[in-house]
Length: 190
Image (tube, rainbow, N blue to C red):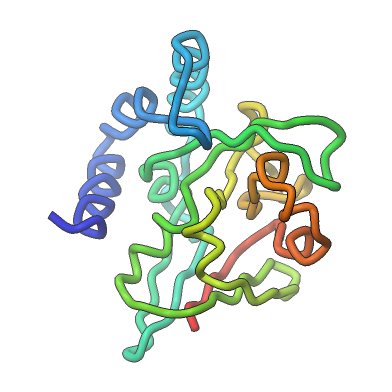
């Protein structure tokens, strides 16, 4: 079974109401490990957030490929994907923060086409082109929550592109800060 098939099955699973229990137990940090106490807390947070997910409004549109494929993802579809936790700091937060959401590479896998870069676009039309390699080299997250609280539109939400800035010295460059786009609404594969 391909990765895309697995992700689609997981999305369908969540849409019919089974996602919270499955994904609550399957979250990891950027090192792929979860301590027992963190897993219980993460599971509770995730279950609460998943149950509140809306399946009516599109949060993210993916597009690209030679045939112009376009996929729209609702909050519930994004919540259905496996989520990871990344503890990091960046110039837009005061302290180390735990961000959670699906990995950017998993979201992009839904397009099932190759490309070399993506254009990330915010609700205010701010956009930045990012090498697709970033999503492979780093655990870039399309964060939906920080410290267990969902983002509102007033607070960089509902999606904020987060790099594991604290884990890699090379990410301290202003080029990467410009890629921390919040209020993400569109990703176009180039």
